[in-house]
Length: 429
Image (cartoon, rainbow, N blue to C red; front, side):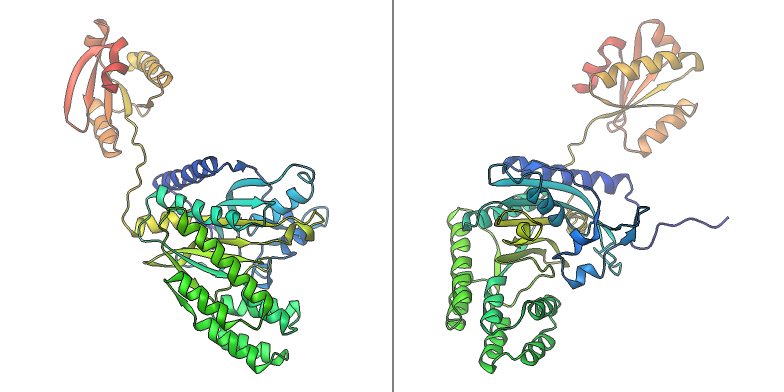
């Protein structure tokens, strides 16, 4: 029989990896609670029309699309925002704003598998909808910083830009939306020369192309200096000037919040999704060349789905990528190691008593395994030790007649005999 393998781009997460993933997910959930975000659960399968509406050509071409049995075009979600926007445009239409909505789960894109990039990946997603003010943008960046700190990442850095600067120039130069989108896709992939060629062919002035070229070179850690340079660079483009002022205001709020966030402003930065309208950002760690999270402002998406005009800003964090970063930094997450117990009956006829002891300990919220392989005590202890179990409770005939059992501390290699009713208390000490 042929050996079954996982489908290309998918993978199994083994217990230790699954545990770290859940740890990060729990931190993401806790961060959502601290910032007042409420969890929603949306379907993994949505209509293709919804998911492709403003995803961008790059994402559209990589979606898992299929026809369901009703002959409808459906797809696996490549990200969360379209689903959340659908919900806000319909079910939440009359609810008071702002909405702070949190989702966590798997997404799917037909990418070429490589380190940190799989076709099934996990994200925690936060959307703040209903406010067009810079404090909403600042909150999403501060929230991301809080999560990165909470999971124990070191040396992470934010890359920040503003789509409004680039779009402002292109719009004033009468470059149509479709071409603008294609240009942003090229800039996202750092194919700048192709982008410049495209705008020239679209009739952009030499002056406009020169400004774009200058912006692509403009980046640095002295964020306010870079923003001032951006402003003087785009001074003849009214919407682009407004966008730089907006970026400056957001960065000012963050720096005055007392949070020291490590940031670089990159004036030529673009992201692959078409719906962004304002600030955009990504988070990186030095040793990995992939974004651990990213997001930005999108003010027209809810309208596109038939909702009221609703400004919004959001971010998604790659849970599996954060795990990869922790592993590459050799950071062992504080997984709140619980004491684990193995209950071993020495004689066959004591297995019922062993089961009772196991159940009593579980009802005291202890992690307990019962020896179910019928192994001899030495072998059972070896197995428990190999798997990192903290304590063995050995139920032997002589001790049991006295209403007692042996507790063996597998880490310290010590053991004592205690009354059965005091096992839990003894282990907890």
